[in-house]
Length: 270
Ligand SMILES: [Zn+2]
Image 1 (tube, rainbow, N blue to C red):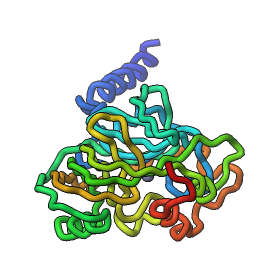
Image 2: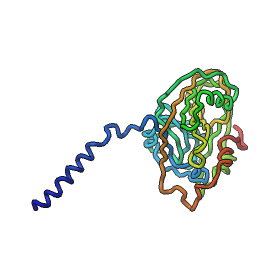
Image 3: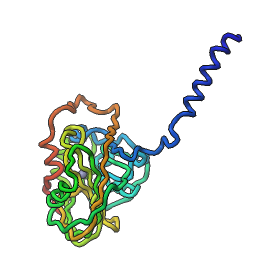
Image 4: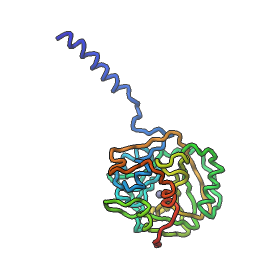
């Protein structure tokens, strides 16, 4: 009996030591971290079922973008809240129980804020950013608070299984252009080498200052504003057991299709 106690006691002490030596701020994400849910090729191939509750997503970061369970609209994470821009043109603040199949978020800690010059297109804005952020091999979260002369947006519509590939779905997306409004561009720039895992280059979502207009951005004209950015050097990818379900080959090169999904307009206009 006493021999057994001798063996058990150190084990019990070891357990206590391990529990007590955990990081004091385990709930806080690394401020330099950018995290994503799933991989983009899974979304491209129609894996639209949500895998992570938004309450958990917000623990990984308060700023970012993505989509929702059943591909039900465009996700905008801004100032610690998550907004859903739906294909009917409405914008809703989301509860923590909703889920996402793909999203990218970071705790937004601005490194620098600079004035945004007037730009006539999204491409021009990206040219301005290229000079501000020449190092293309780190991730950057970019926030542009501005007065927009115009902004062209889209929102994907809720899908039902069996899901079709994203390229087919976006051919029927809702698109609209709004003029003269204040709002925020939520941007993520990924290195080119993330092909297949995330979206290489710039990806922009938008939320108006009154939270009534939002979506995935095709183009914009900016009168004036500010650009803030946060470089992220730790990349976290949250995987799940349903990745590649149904024998989907996630290793295939879908970069041409992804470019169409991100940049090309569909067939409908509101
Ligand atoms: Zn988007």
